[in-house]
Length: 76
Image (tube, rainbow, N blue to C red; front, side, top):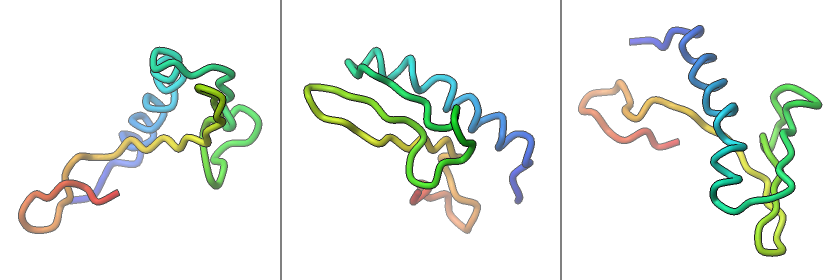
């Protein structure tokens, strides 16, 4: 079974769209969308602060299960 590229892009886009709101709700401040400057940053999608620390945050929206044999949690 293969993943439909359009669905994968939609799922990824939804994850990145929701992330700033979720980060803010979790107490992060100074949230910067690194993809706004350059699409598909190598190491992270967002930069944010909380309790005096800066965090690089990578957003991964993936299917929960793998397609090999018995359903296993996606290792990524």
